Length: 138
Image (cartoon, rainbow, N blue to C red; front, top):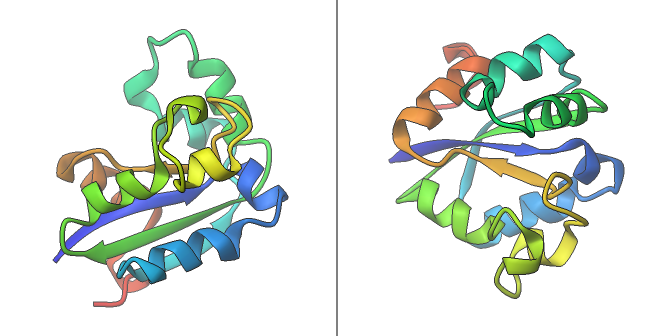
């Protein structure tokens, strides 16, 4: 079984989309094995997105991700990284496929409702950033 990290971003939480995102995961055979709500500080957001530190969008991204509560989840399933990325859709909601989370709910590239790990190595770092082993149901 593969695991990945998913985040419902501040815009998704503020717009009451937590249940809808979770419903889509469960409907597609993705199991949630860890979940919590938190409000990242700016420093926590900078640490999480450190890989993007040199990118021009880093400051606005970390400001946005620390602007309100988020829901972080550990997802588990066969090929869950790829499956979750298909469910989310392209980062730019205007380029996302019909029926994806971002196409259906995102308002712009930054406020695109969800984040998901893009590779097993990224998933391992991201899960470890938010969860310890006692917080994940085996």
